[in-house]
Length: 175
Image (cartoon, rainbow, N blue to C red; front, side):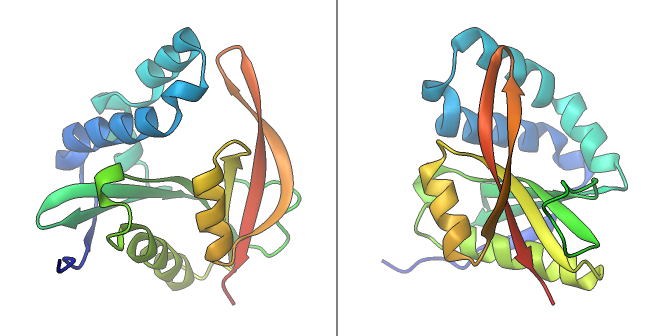
């Protein structure tokens, strides 16, 4: 089977509706079974609405990339300028705050193409490193980041409702 090359574009406000649906679906697929239902649904309601995604797209400190295969939405990433934790030493640094793909596109080159686009964008904006936090229970994601030369440089907590979760902080030098 021939795998179609992923096509990546920068999200615009007109993408907010489709992007919010993709964001919710990929987040549910990745984490719904691992979280308390009430906490999870509350988080979804707060962070994956069309209006919330549209406001994030319009934020000059955020950059969304949408990846498509055969003109079908396959995944997305969000980079944002945010203060890095103290364990991220190579500054300036940009945060990879979301990085998801639909399960049916795993193994089709979506992740590698998307991470390369994020790195290219960060380098183009003169960032010296890119960092992210990832739940310690996110085995598949953590393995992907390690495979792409992100190193664990610290840890932090993340509150999903009443559940306080432990995250790895990964960083990758870009220079």
